[in-house]
Length: 157
Image 1 (cartoon, one colour):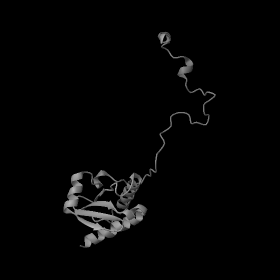
Image 2 (image 1 turned 60 degrees about the vertical axis):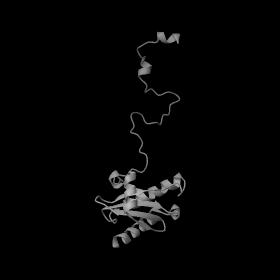
Image 3 (image 1 turned 180 degrees about the horizontal axis):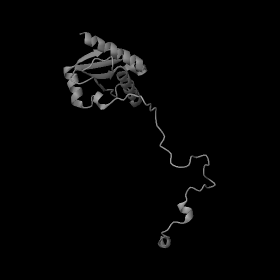
Image 4 (image 1 turned 30 degrees about the horizontal axis):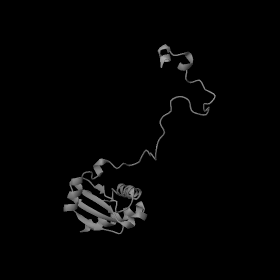
């Protein structure tokens, strides 16, 4: 540590010009500033799943469970309730359903099914989806079709 007292405060010419290629440097690497890489499939027209379309808090789920109605299909159970706001979705996949990758896969599929069928879903509904064991092999289209079928029977009641 004694040598640090004698370090110059000014940088040398070589230290300032760090753009000089060195023998071990990759010559094909782009020079200058590069924008960060885009991660994932980011499409310009991709629709989002905003917070205004989600059930987020426990009291919302409890209110839906207490005063809502339940429909049971082969792949999903749907709890629904009439509300003042537009259609909102809540998903519950407990550890009884499966391990974390299986639960996350179902939630992704259910969100996509809800998002792609927003035009067909009756407005002013809160919807809570619970997966059944058969949903582990289901596709997004199958979940979407069952969701729409169950909700169409709910509207007819």
